[in-house]
Image (cartoon, rainbow, N blue to C red):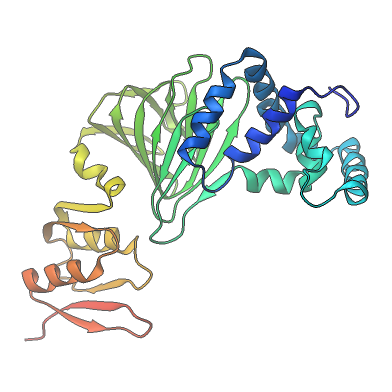
Amino acid sequence: MTGPKNRVTSADTEAAKWHARLGERSVATQTVEDFFAWHQRPENAEAYRRVQAIWGQSPQLAGQPAMTDAVRDALARRKAKHRPGRMPQALLGLAAVATAAALVFGGHAWFQARSVYSTVTGEQRVVQLADGSTVRLDTESRIRVRFSGDHRDIDLEAGQALFTVVHDQARPFVVRVGESTVTAVGTVFQVERRGADADVTLVQGIVDVRSAAERSKPVRITVGDQARVRAAGAAVSRVNLASETSWTEGQIVLRDTPLRDAVAQVNRYLTDKVELDAPGLAATPVNGVFKTGDRDAFVSMASGGLGLEVSPLAGGGVRLSERRK
């Protein structure tokens, strides 16, 4: 293990700064372009690889006695030496010390927060990952990123995401939903989590899908396929890609969608939700295209087309119910 007193090169210092900048909540396109220009130099690429490897080790290191002592000592030095306007020396040495993640930010807890990206109700977000891949998060979604020198792992903990993966044969890109996995090298695919299950839709390239029951037997899907991954296995069918990925354009496309499912889709983007009280019409198929978050347009379609009554609810929501005879 590299010790805290080992020599820190300028490439190490720059790599630590880039790692921090690329992990911010909002990353400008120009920042990403500047990073790739910097990353082209072999010594810079190697320094950045070391930073990623250290970050991958930090959760395991956090509980060790040596880590605890290093954290205490580093925080004490930081208080004594830090001056406004300058980056703490501990952060500048990030790429050279295996305890760096904890030295400045308090260790394992900060690492966990650093690797998690999420959205709230009605929000969508594009995350630029350190390898150049991007993740578009839908409303109420959450991912945890774990990169190292030989793997790229993403845990989809909630919601839905579209992954655009940069090719790297040596480091497969794996998305996990519970015990199920989706493995790609360079491709575009969408994963929607449904409890412990997932729907995987392939937009470009090829991916291998493994359910909890098929750990040694992956199912390969091609463009236009959707794999419904359940505990017992994965069932593959053809889907309309424009409809399935319409949320990335800020739209909800309903094609013969049961009314109860349509309400659920619309509600994902609303804080003031639609309540359906029409058991006789819940399975009725509906069609339409709506902007995400446009409750009024959906309510108008449902009430006008199906003869539903609209009534306000306490707190701001609305109820759709069958008309009384």
